[in-house]
Image 1: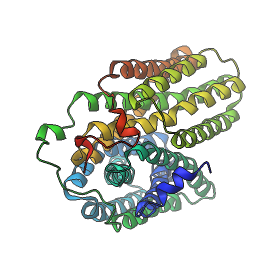
Image 2 (image 1 turned 90 degrees about the vertical axis):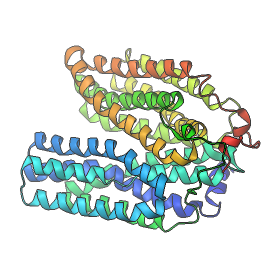
Image 3 (image 1 turned 30 degrees about the vertical axis):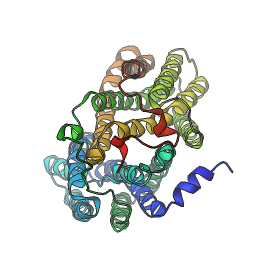
Image 4 (image 1 turned 180 degrees about the vertical axis):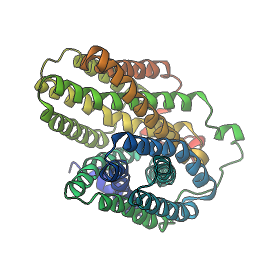
Length: 413
């Protein structure tokens, strides 16, 4: 049956118990930023203030997430999660109170920053649990597990914004913020209670030195560069598609185009995870970044919203395999003692790229029209392909690790 691989993963003792709460938390995280937009704008009516608060949220999240992950790697998920979840609940309550009290822009921005700084990083923790669960005897299933994570994340970013928008449209923006926080906190508490699947804090065998656990080496920096570039791609794509449909007098086409892209990505991610690929992850990375580059080049030639939808469906299908390959390559290149940190740093790099792209693509669109924004996406895709080519040998993983053979010493628990 097609979904047998996914079912066998979730039937692994302890797997569903951490994957499902992490999935609920992802919906909460997917709702949080947009819920803040609705909450602040409903009260202030000012997009400038709204942008200031959501910007503070995003920056704090990107900067603090790796530091929280560092504490998790050092002290364990079950010890760090409960106090961090309490901090998040308090921060959300504080922001809601500040908005209700019509506080100054400075205080609102501070409130947004505190919410961002306390966002629980359950995605990175769930990925680390999969690595700990499968690394020893079932390493060949790691790509499928990370594909499952990618699918969960994609579903969350489909469902979450719709829930927030529906609540806000009925005049309940506060309810959207509270629901987002509730899903994050409840999901985190359930996850923290699953002690059996939590990664061990054992440092490893004596052959590992302190340098083995450093994140400052070429492979990790390359992966951060790739995540930065894909963040730029995402940020520029959202703005550019919107600008294109407005230019062509069809603003209502934006939602269907984004929906087509999301559905294409979900299908591609599902199918990718079902197959055991013979090529190494490094080779796959080069193939898929090359395909993304070809797809983005087509964006420069489209002349109608319908044509744009077809090309966006194509580019959307190349993204999920990349989002699977990034954690696969990360797991194979960093020491398990800093794995959660590595996942968080890659997420922060992607967020930084997306934020930067919004400003850069906006300038390009004002100067050159929608195709100026698409040129930014092409640049990001080309940068990913060049990085993949440059890192082909650096990121090449022993093939036995992905075909079920005994993992190398560096990957044993």
